[in-house]
Image (cartoon, rainbow, N blue to C red):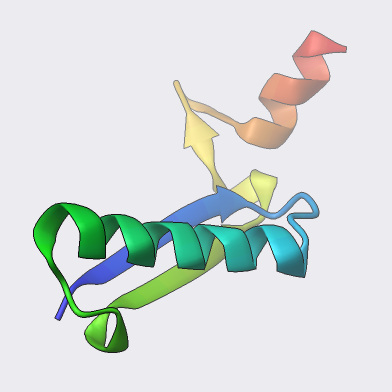
Length: 67
């Protein structure tokens, strides 16, 4: 019973894009490891950029520096 947790920043991933991720990961686990799609769990967590840090700074601040 595979459990896959995908974490992305909350920046407008569409319902369709998330559906593609769920389908793609499920298909990959089936093809590579023979896992049953009916018992494969894929969860997508969307995290605010203020709550995601890299190198001691939030993604929000890092992206401000790029502009």
